[in-house]
Image (cartoon, rainbow, N blue to C red; front, side, top):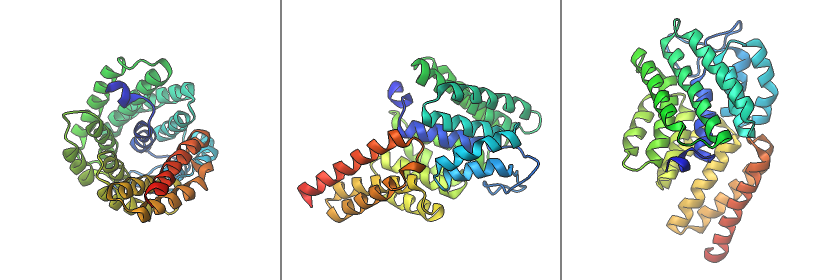
Length: 304
């Protein structure tokens, strides 16, 4: 079960890219932007880093994020988010050495933050440990070695929670991990993880995306559809959200024996494929989307 949970997958991709980037929102730069977590008082982030963050998660345009990341690393050199975003981009491309380097830089920035902001310092420490664990699993296939690191990640997150249990950034990052574990591990409580995540995580579009994924993996497709539509209404033409909605409609249509729903899914698969260049790893993502579309079309041939 642990090996299945930690191997590369859509769930782990979400955990590493979304959680890494979300968890590592920075502690300010020369130019300031808003706080995407609606905190009061705000903890603004650097403009260059915010541009990369929004390109990845709001717009779903990873090519634009790759174009912008060098500027973020230069202008926000001490910004943990910039390094975590670079690590996430490296993960998507299978560049394990860059993942390792910027995971270490994330941890270094975390140590600098400890005396100034215990919430974010401990949060970033957990993110850095997460990246180290990802490197061990993906590069070295060291699944057993990831177990104690997972414990240390949660210890760091718990320390952050002790400093401020209501911080929405922390709750979003920690919530993604809890959702992933609750959905994939036996004897867990998905409903508790879902309720906690819904109550405490922000921003809303990433909260709704995480809930859509959780409900999808639990086979609760109608609830998943509600959440993905909410996420899509806030993210415009984000092709990853389009793809997620296609997956959910495909499964819902088969479950309820509704060919029209599966036809809508096929249209959305096509729409996502039309923007495949924006995906995290187009060469790997395109065959997967085409395969899922083909399965839906074959179901329609038999049932439509």
